[in-house]
Amino acid sequence: MALRLYNTLTRNVEPFIPLDPDTGAVTFYSCGPTVYDYAHIGNFRAFLVSDLLRRWLESPLCQRVDAQGEATGQTGYTVHHVMNLTDVGHMTEDAALDGGGEDRMVVAGRRLAAAKKSGALPAGAAVDPNDPYAIADFYIQAFKDDARVLGLKVVADADAHPQSDTLPRATAHIDDMLRIIASLLEKGCAYVASDSACYFNIESFPRYGALSGNTLARLRAGAGGRVQAGAQARKNHPADFLLWKPDPAHSMRWDPADFLGEARARSLNLREGYPGWHLECSAMALAGLAGSAGMIDIHSGGEDNIFPHHECEIAQSCCYTGAPGFARHWVHARHLFVEGAKMSKSAGNFFTLRDLLAKGFEPAAIRLELIRTHYRSNANFTEQGLRDATRMLERWRRFLAAAGVQHGAQGDAANASPSLRNIALSDSAQAARDAFTASFDDDLNIAGALGAINTWIGKTAAPGESDTALFFAIDNVLGVLDRPSLDDARGSLTVTVASAADSASRASGLTDAQIEALLNARTAARAKRDFSEADRIRDKLADAGVEIKDSPKGTTWLRTAKL
Ligand SMILES: [Zn+2]
Image (cartoon, rainbow, N blue to C red; front, side):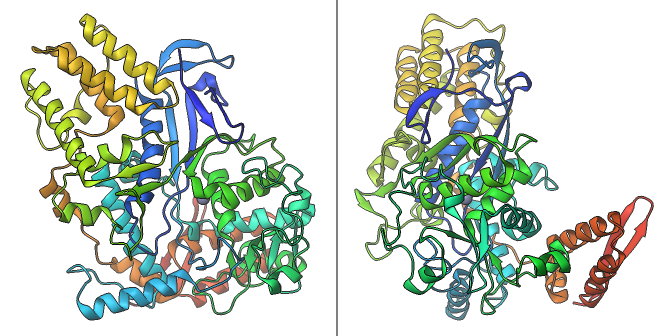
């Protein structure tokens, strides 16, 4: 038996077969947080669903399969997991209108300025509310703090490999986005309208709607009323969506000439602006994960990402790569309700992780409560549920204590060897292992998996070493017992002061990522012997206080700007 997973695209529970089964590698992209506010527990539910799936794929309890879906006898995939950070300030009305409403980064700046004034910002948090990059840094730091407390492995990956692009920032991939836009324009899959904005031409992709059911026929002109009347008039089809928008008022803007070269940007009629939200995820998934075939194994998000976000990602990615699809499996977590109601600030049931820690709930219980409803059901997060989760944890800790395991606040489960080879399990432990495995293989049936654990524990008065080995293998999937204690978690929430290097980069007006992108463009220009373009980029960098040095080993740069 092996994993069967619901695929939103096919609307079926189907065998999970990786694109490249021989290598044991799985490519997995998760839509991450927007970083103009703290993530709330509903956001974290979706992130934890991705984390749970990833942990299961990596587990030595998970059977790998070959291209026919037959078990290979090997266990545990190597998961290449990427989660993006949406740090471009998108518009408050973006879900309904293309670029309508107000820049969310500006809204966040106003909120932070008010918090600063009232003393509500954490001690030591220095953030310039007028600097969109500083605002993004502030909330990225907060997100990572929360994610570490809740045990998101993708953030642990990024911590362990800071040079990797595990948590890519949209602002660092503008070059990838413009490359896609240029290609789509050249293929006739996109156009620049009379308002100078670049839109994707959905009629160039007949399969539009396959994921969400919102097909071209259903989205015919006028239907849905999703588009502002003014913008609608400028678009060929009302559901054409934004790829690039020139807007002198937007807090973050890039000049396409810096990435595509002046001649190409001018010939494509692309002006200084900012990217559409959907495009960011395609660019980062393709850059970070997709091989030459242009596809990834799994793409996940919350159910509200299905339309328009993921539908649009599929259309632009497939038109760009020419591949038959974008992700093979689409996984969506349903909503989180709190005390039976939709979370809202006005109803007083809106919680961040920080709110729950302040109420005295421990991280392990919060994680368990957030994962213990099946991902395709709406979850109802309640204080009673948190108390029940706490009781379940206490039982598990008593079980480990009975086996002589002194479980510290953190680390034991993570450090325990997950290898289960050559371990003879008792009949009840073997039954628990089989039932737990069968449950996870059945579209991540978490209730069945928890039931298997609790039944086994109830029957095992004197657990031994083999029981603890199995328990740790199971907990490496659930990710619960190695969460920090409440006190450690509270102490770890440090939204830190922006570093001097970051401040220096902002003083020069260019971020590290923007400088790297310009250097790449310059290298490409030199390779094509377009020396006037290469010199133009060098001058632009010099103007921004960045000095570059060419050597046989490549190009290095340093800032000459003063703080
Ligand atoms: Zn996304």
